[in-house]
Length: 244
Ligand SMILES: *[C@@H]1O[C@H](CO)[C@@H](O)[C@H](O)[C@H]1NC(C)=O
Ligand SMILES: *[C@@H]1O[C@H](CO)[C@@H](O)[C@H](O)[C@H]1NC(C)=O
Image (cartoon, rainbow, N blue to C red; front, side, top):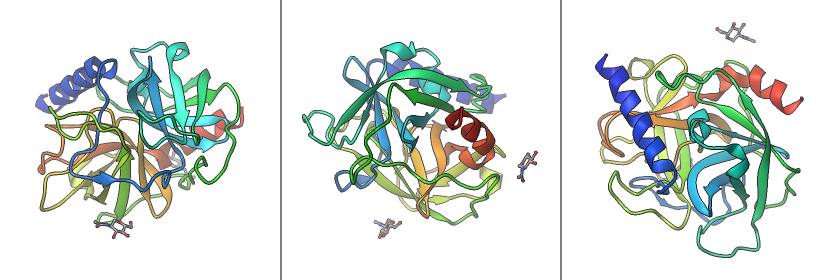
């Protein structure tokens, strides 16, 4: 009961923050510009509120909770960005033309995944490109080293970053997680995902294995793991959407 309550509260916090704050990774480092060419910034009135990943030229994958309170027709998808403030030549911007849902449960945060069809195909180049998807039901062993990235806050109460941050994380054992999630931790120091990183990628061996979904305590608590949707379990749904 406490656990569910905590998730619900976090969900609420992230929704409240969605319109007014950007979120950043805690304890990470600035990414090399455009070294994650699949990452998208979802924006409302030019304000970053969630991340996403390009999985096909015209399709973006993100967390369902990112759009649970937001009219998709108001969202701008920005690819090829590094600094949120700069007017970068590498940028491509899109509107959302269709949303593919897969049974998101806002109480338990299960199935926290949606696919967004863009209003046209992205032009693929060195700064904008698709990310590789996992095989159906592929598992990621505990101890695997992965990288997550985003423009989320630098701390629970901290400021919003301008430039994309990245963080090395380690996949935790299943006993700390749930079957439909993949969980990560950063050992020996306080670091992790934070508000505004939602919907962004967890990359393990160059494959997108997770979508940033929720945290249980504060950002970068150093105690509780971070929870990502387990992309491999949704491979059929993803394929149906992008082949539609
Ligand atoms: C993947 O896992 C689901 C749920 O356990 C199962 O129904 C499905 O048959 C599996 N698919 C493959 C290709 O292993
Ligand atoms: C982060 O991971 C990358 C490869 O996944 C590795 O090359 C790099 O050394 C790691 N950085 C730190 C600070 O651990």
